[in-house]
Every structure is written in structure tokens, then in C-alpha cells.
Length: 227
Image (cartoon, rainbow, N blue to C red):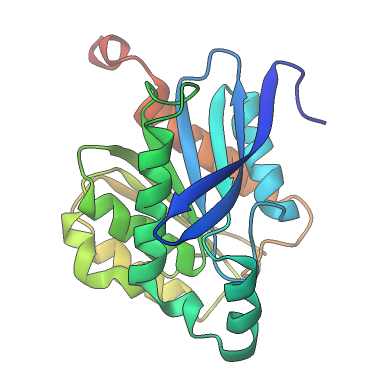
């Protein structure tokens, strides 16, 4: 159950000719806001995404869960699979959502981080490379950062790659991306976890790792970091 001090609302975000639907949750005293970039078939209502978002809300991090594809696009992608790999499209929509966060009163003054999953991780990293001054940390869960390989050396934000230990095809792709990153970075392989982290306690482990990363690299006051 969401803490009573967290205010959540459904939002609509303009992106070109489209309107993206999202859920903005802002706990009292929020220190930063984390934008979730999902892969196809997963969005603002996903059980896994909601669990991670609530864990971040519990430690005073605001969250924006946003569908990067419209309902019509999701239906088309379910048939063809072409939009989930259109990283340029997804990245541009992440940037539109980022701009929106800078305009709404609840989050306009908050530093921004990205949490990307599957191909959404590539979109988040490409967006972070394009806005190095705006994005302060990135976390990838079961992501495909290799799909943004040409952008990785331009990412300035500290980046954490989280991969399931049983997700064998994706591990080497993340290792290659880790080697390509030039920012402060980390990689954690969660033992016994599959691509979706559906096993008992695994998505909770992702949430803990993500919260720690964002708190370490965004939410701690700069004077405390220097002390």
C-alpha cells in the first residue's frame, strides 16, 4: 500500500502528435524524481514497475511511470515487434517526458534520474547522452544498453546495470555496454533471477539496488558528499 504522504496522479504528457499516459507519484520531501522507461508490453500499470516505484517512493524519491507507446502503437507492436526496437523514437519520448517533468510544479526543481528496462534502458541511456546536464543517474534492469552502443561514451550520468544471473543471452550484452561506458558505472548480476526478475524476492532486490544507486548519486546533498 502506498504511503499516505505520497501523492499520486494520472498525467498526460504531450509528445509530438501523441499524448503519453503516466502516473506521477511524489512523496513528501522528495529529493529527486526518477523517470521509468519501459520496453514494449510493460508500462505504467506493470506490477514489477509499480513495486520498484513504490520502493523508491518509500525513500523519498518521486517517480514517473510513463507509457512510451500509445495504446494503438502497443497493439501494432504486439503484431510486428518493430516499435520496441525503435530506440530513436523511444528516446525522443523519454526526452519529452523529461521536459514535462521540468515544467510541472511538483518536480520542476528536482534533479532527474532514469530507470530503464529492456529496450527502454537503451532509450534512457541515449536520452541521458543527449542531456548530460539534466540527467544525474541511470539504472538499467534486464536492459539492452547495447542497442544504444554508439551513445554510451557520451553518457555522463553514473549508470548501474542490473542483470539476472539466469538471463544468459543478455549478460554479455551488458558486459559490452559496461566496457563502453565512460561515466562512473556499476554492474550487478542477481543470482537466480531471470530476465523479468519474476522469482521470489528478486524484483525487491532490484528495487533496493536502484534506490541505493539513486540515493548515492542524486539524493545526497553535495556538501555531505564533500565532507
